[in-house]
Image (tube, rainbow, N blue to C red; front, side):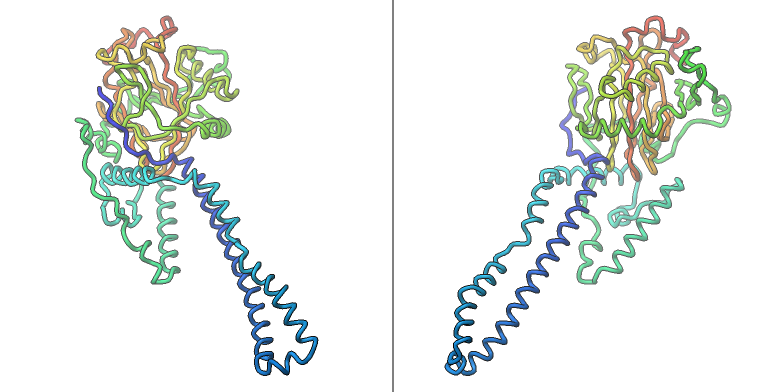
Length: 442
């Protein structure tokens, strides 16, 4: 599969948060500049009033005024000293602090490509979730079944309405006019399952019947009597029956999540995929997020999470890839893809020397208020992110053959902030660990 050129990528949600704090700091700096200018202007006005009064008297009878020696001295002093002081006051530039502050932050401002990326993200959301163009361009989002999302939407819409009424009519133009984001055309690399994928993202077309659902269970999982899980087993829930996908509750604590996010933030960069022909990591237009890779040596929390994944799955992580942390900004997504390499891609993981990706362990590190589901178009599954939980599935059968049903996607984030981390577990070292019963059709 050839990789096409990557489109502009919107900033990650974490970077956008930093920009909010930056803008708040700049507004405060701007206010301080205004106060300084007002203070300077008040001082100049005071000088002007004082000098105006003096000149009114002196100019009415110049000779009589100068006949008094004190008046003559004061005129000399004013012109030699005080007018120089006034000149210095007028030449003072209170904007230096503000200009310095904005210059410091400017390298971190979004550029034209960032703006284009954000616009494309809006169009992607509009297309995927079938949003009304007029309402969406004015910031109006559809009702959401998620209680918190609905509350947030109502809050921000009320806040926007209040702001509009408080701003003077002459200043309303930039608020009232709909955002001009252009027209949206489907990508040239049109996916055959795109309609199914987007329908699943909208919560439509999920194929789990009540009969099949009755066969899903929850249980305590001790990793085949793993000593670290015997006293505190994991809560395991079936998400799907065939292929089997399970969710683990309380897979990550809040503190662990925050530590992982803080470790990842300084290193977030455009998320990459492995070129199936060369095995080299590169960007692709179907993956829109920012990611970072963490080693076990980076922090005890990362090492602990890696060990927990091994304990839960029973698969060694010695040959696994590093823990990948991804943050999805506005419209961030990962279109349908396989985690494993196919027969026509024999060199995809050759450089790693650890075989194919046998399984995927995906940690959800945030709740997502609307959108952001993990969907499997082949069999119609949609798995919603839930902070602190993790989902796990096998990509390969025990024969080493790829399970093509596991082609999956990360839906665009409509409302909220999506953080995930994942571990791609490879074949090497699993020879006596993988379940023997993992055969096609199960």
